[in-house]
Image 1 (cartoon, rainbow, N blue to C red):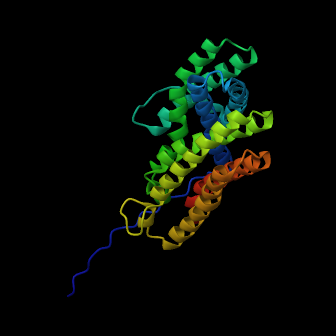
Image 2: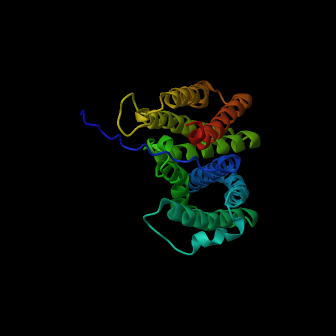
Image 3: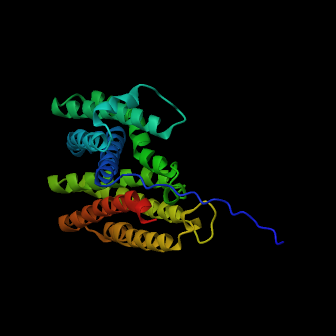
Length: 287
């Protein structure tokens, strides 16, 4: 009798019940942490030249964090028990590290906001920026690490997703700084923000390409069994690279400080960040 070879059981993972609240959470968190990071670097490296735009940025960061915390708590199955996540700290758990980093970063976002309101001395602002920079950078990368550390096939193949978020957040922050500088007529600050944004977008494009991997590469998204998802995701991320990254890079290079061009750059960067995050959140529902 011919021998029968038992096939290994195929494991199916259930898509998480994540939708619009999680998209808003990832977007607002990246925008808040990225804006704080860029503003903090400006405070530390160019404290007087960029003083006006950084103080406005600190006005913006705390409300963004409040909006993010609302989205984060609203998406929980039992929102009233959100504080239970802070009862323990597990260094080996990305979620535990991320929740604590968000909590610490929220404190510094508030301190920066208060310092801007009371027009605190430059030394105080620099201290807040220097100490708050570390949790801000952790928060920037946190969501990408969390996604890639789950059991979802579409996410766990994206090993460079943490790096992609770590670059996307300051890119969004640089876009916010460009918007503030342009709206206040500070064209010197706008030129600096535009230059930084351009190089952050170039690095983001390279990392997003690494996220996608190459056909047949083990450990990348292209190693998934569902080729329809691979094709659709590749198409969407190619569109994102061209429209959300490539076009803003082109405009940054050839912009002469025209406010309308700067507005287009900001709109493209932030819209691309929002749509790419929404597609990422909804990716498991397509399998």
